[in-house]
Amino acid sequence: MALDELYQEIILDHYKHPRNHGTIENADVKIPGKNPFCGDEIILSIKLKDNIVEDVAFEGNGCAISQASASVMTEQIKGKTLPEAKELFEEFSKMVKGDIDFDEGKMDELAAFQGVCEFPTRVKCALLSWNALKKALEQKNK
Ligand code: ZN
Image (cartoon, helix red, strand yellow):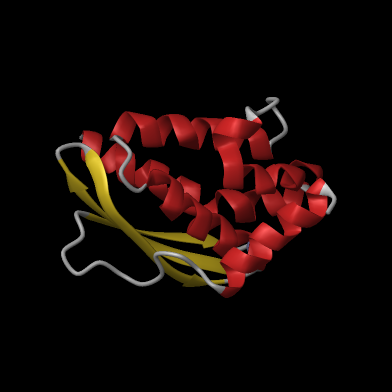
């Protein structure tokens, strides 16, 4: 299987079977995100414990890229510390904007979104959930 087909498959799988889908009852932060260019919407819920992302979930609807990106993100940041989550955000956003050569081993499923950098209108879709995460982290730092 070609690499881009594999990546397609990861995205479709997460779109059809989103991980951590739903909402968290007693979340510490709930952040809505909207991408009016494509009509994507998400609500990100995060529960923290001692500076660690103890639980994370999302609800929403929109295109495959936006929803799959949210699904992959929740899997990636669960159990991470806030600085680690922030670092991942920075790497991911650079990758989808085509600014860095990412570390394939490190990025694993996130790497499926690297092709997005060739479609500027899709970058906002891929970053929707991550921008919500960034807002959530900023709120917690206040
Ligand atoms: Zn979209």
